[in-house]
Image 1: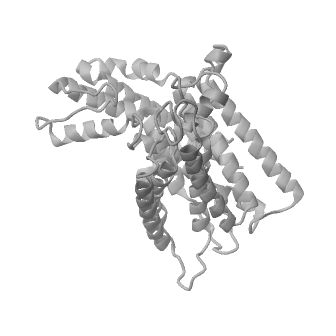
Image 2: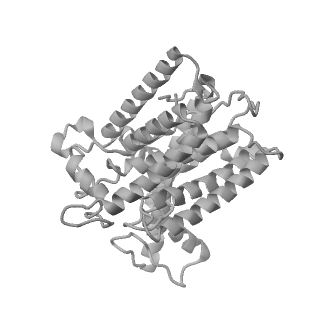
Image 3: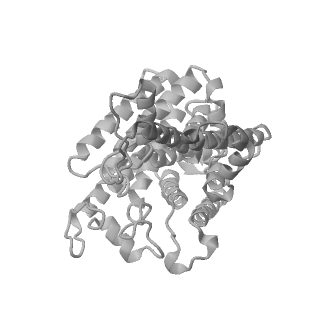
Length: 415
C-alpha cells in the first residue's frame, strides 16, 4: 500500500541494510501542502495590502502585480511570493505550477519504501501477497477518485452535466496506480524504458495526431490533442469549458512524474554498484546534480514541446521533476543527513496527514469561519487592509494545532 498521508518506515533492504526514516519526505510533503491549505492566502493577503497602499497595477489575466521603486525590499519580496502563487496562464512555469507534480513525485519516492516488505528483489513474495497488493491498490485508487469528485461538489448532486469527474486527487490516484504497476512488475531497466516510452509517446501523439478543425502539433488551449480528447471522452463538466487541467490524456505523462519519484526512492534504498560507496551525503549531492540535468533537459525540450502544466507536457515532466528532485535533495540533506530537524516539525505535522488536511481545507471544514470566530476580536483591532492575511494566519494556527494533536496521538488518515 502507498501511504501518502503517513511517514515512511524503511525496512532492511538486502543491499543497503539501512533502518531509518525519511523525515525529509514527511516535511517536504508538508511544505508542499502548506501552500494550498493556507499559505497562499496569507501571502496574497499581504500582497493585496501592499497593492492598495501604493495603488499598484495587477494583470487581470495572469494576476501578476507590478512593482516599482517605491516598495521596500520586504514589500517586493511579499509581492514576488504572491505572484509566484498563481498558475501560469498557459505556457511557462511558476512556483505554484510545481506544487501538484511535487506531490506526485513525493508519492513516487515513497513507493519503494512502502512496498519493501512485499518484495524480494523485484519479485512479489507469493500469490497471496500479490493479490493483496493489487486489491489494496485498486481500492485506494477508487477511493481517491471518489474523494476527488466529492471535493468537486459531487454530494451537492448538481446533475451529470454539471458534475466534474476529473480531479486533483483523481490524477494522483491514477498516476500512482500505473506507476505502482510498472514498479511492481518491471526491473529498473524496464521501468526506465517505460518512462521514456511515456514521455516520447506523449510528445509524438500531441505533435503528430491531427485534431479536427485545428490540425496537428497545435498547442493552444482548444487546439491541442489532450483538450480534444477531454471534449470527446471525458464525462460530465470540463473545468475550463474546452479542456480539463486534470483530463484524460494529460494524466498519462503524470505517470512519468510518479516514476521519477520511484527512481529516486530506489536510488535512496540501494547502493550504486560501483567501487565508491554512496553515503547519504553523496546521494544528496548526486540527486542535486540529477535535478539540474533534468531541469536543463526540460528547458531544451521546451524549444519543441512547451513547458505547460495544463497539458502536462513531457518537457514539463522533466522540468518540474528536476525542480522536485532539487527541493527534495535539500530537505534530505538538511533533515536526514545533517540532522537539522526541529525547524521542520510543523511541516511534518502537515505532511503525515496530508490527504486529511487537503480534504478538510477544500470543503470539509470551514477554517476561515473558525479563524474569524476565534481571532476576530483581535483582528478587528488592526487596519482593515490586513484582515485577510491575519485571518489566514489564524487558519494556519488552527490547522497546526489540530494536526499536532493528531500527530502526537499517532492518528493518521491511511488510504
